[in-house]
Image (cartoon, rainbow, N blue to C red; front, side):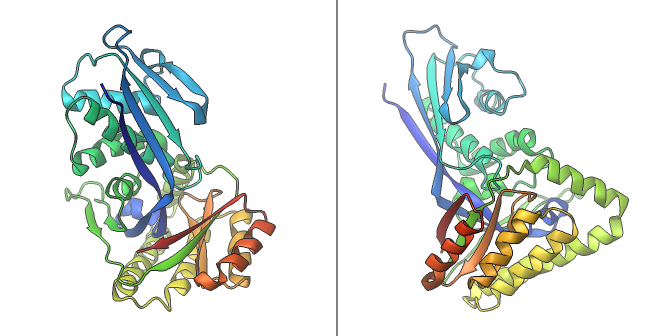
Length: 320
């Protein structure tokens, strides 16, 4: 029986992080330069039901039965088997690898889930639709992030730029997901602070701060949402001249809610000084990545400046 392989890209949030958890829109785009990959093979020499897992990037080699129930990989297998009505799978081995940095705001957890679901469902003869993959990945995201918005699993599943609005708790509507038209490509330079950014912690801190000052935070989240809507209109019209200033405004608001950091602020300042058209943190914050909008001709200069300022890794990606 042949091996079944699937991959999924990383992602960055261009606008709207944190506010998206509270019903405001956000824009996210895939980053194909980094990928998660899952390879599933039959293991006929083993007893039925045995699932062996190799994930060398996190130094994991084990059987599924030996993983704690709350482990994200265990949750992913459990969710898929339940969805497909599989009580005992054939003996199989799974190898998961990824070039997406962990805890850096690039969607590593969601990408692993999406790649795994695609490869494993194909192996079991029940290839799933994107909508099903997305829903399953969201359930696993809850273990990674506590109160996820759903944006990571969405943009990674569809591998397209998306405009996303999450259902506000209790209003009964579905998440709004619209594929974003990008008639005029633009270039983003991603720079990693090298500091882990556990999204669940930042999201939890923001939730508690919002509970203490609901009016202040609602005002900030509304402003972030307005920026995301303006950015969508500019991107879809191909009018990108003011997109950088929107990134600057978004970053200032994220600083107000306490999710930036000295390392992120330093890289943002350096990128702007080196010629970036705008810059902001991306993702949960406190560490992880910042992104900058650049003229491709300035890419080398901005990239060098960021590396000299302490960026541990940079990725150049074109949107559209």
